[in-house]
Image (cartoon, rainbow, N blue to C red; front, side, top):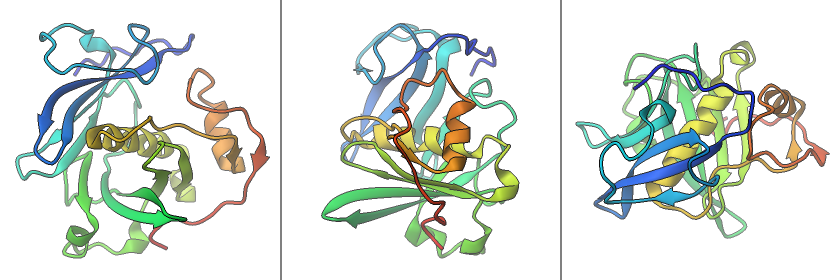
Length: 216
């Protein structure tokens, strides 16, 4: 994918191209950041190759050769972000479906690989080695929690978690898209303030306490 970085001087929309339907009702997805479509809009499938700008691609979402989900981010989207793989953990709260991604930085899987929680228990990695985690409501895309280990908080880990969660959400074909509500921690607010051009962040309404990751 292209390395050209789009200027952050003005808000740009995140939108999605559904390339092909995958068995199980899931989608091969290409995510863009540009002004070509409204934020959150989904187009396709069946569009001609080259219909949209390759240099605005944020992520490619597909299955790898082992049929594992993989969310590959373009280098320009998060320059300098570490290579991470993720464990997907479905759950439920108050009768609503939630999803979590827990990030690890070992060399066991290629960057962007998403494995199941059952598969994780066959990998020689401890839960305590997690780099960070994100949890969101699967029925709306609203983020419930983001956690990043303190020593990793200047390395774009939080945003990589958010972008990857968005890829998983769109891959599943769930309603809505990943977004941030008005309640967040001091750390979350600092992340938001560093990315003032993002269009999916509600105004701050309430400070919340930092909580640990989903696997703690």
